[in-house]
Length: 183
Image (cartoon, rainbow, N blue to C red; front, side, top):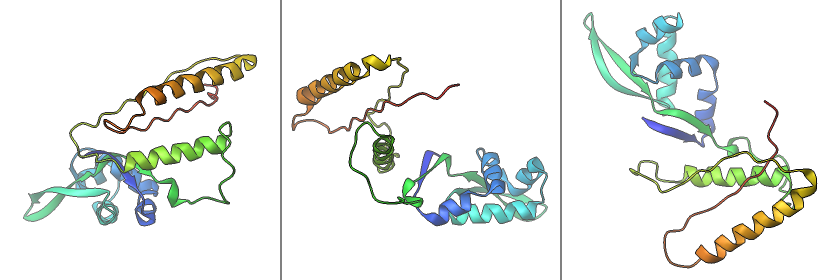
């Protein structure tokens, strides 16, 4: 089972985005038969089997074994991934891209879409991918925002200058700073 399955085909998204199928997928985080899933969801095995068939056709579920029950072969199924990630390209862009304003929310969304596409293209079957994720919360008074942004830009430019040579493995660095919603 993969950690994440990146969905770029509209048919996969249409198959996934049905409440009953999401419940079936949750049950199939561990291998189960349609009968077992039906019992857990208080549905008929036939109804669950219908949804499982659609999920298998879309590549979201795989048959991992079979059991013989009362002389009949019953499939054992498991979700293909722990999480499913929908490509923003499935919706498409409404209107054209605007001028690249680094301080706009649109620019941040474009950057996140680019990062998402880059991550999806990685070989996730590799035993270990050298990567790092850093996240934290900072607080900046409004009058200090320009100074903070200038310092952040200078620090990043220094890193790009020192490590931006032609030798070694290439990595992409993306920094996002956005207002944190109230929790």
